[in-house]
Length: 211
Image (tube, rainbow, N blue to C red):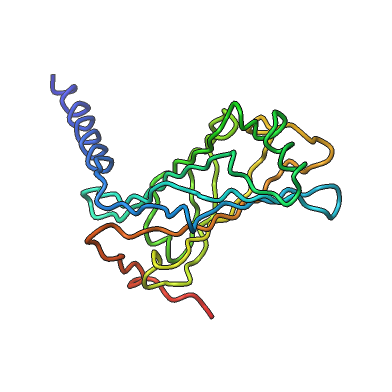
């Protein structure tokens, strides 16, 4: 019995610590403003040309998570309507929405769920990891939060996110031999402050960006 007590006590201690670290409630939530938020993408075509597109009306929520252990964490979920795609060339847009690429008829939405990340990275920048649901496929991706232009009140400024994904990973094999497999992403996110809540001062412990 004595030999069993120590492992059992250790297991209970670990489970308790795990529960404390992951028990979370949403303390605050900021709505992504679709009128001011968007996602742009660029794909290289042949040697020097590029195909560009914009998804306006990015929507979703930035959650501030209460971990009960003092960690200031955030999480983002975001949605795009594929049919809203804007491109300069009408033929390119039609092909992009077709079966070889986004296949808007079958997969009308794109969704991203981030992992929890330190809210301080809205100031200093950092990796934004999560699961991207695109073209019926779900895969982990890593994007990059850029340094804020408003280090004291980062939610008052545009939140910029860059990244690169592989379209073949998400089953988009159209235009092979014409377009690169790498798709560069540029997200511009504007959030609305919660009612009766001031935007947090996240820059008090972060150095201002170099001019």
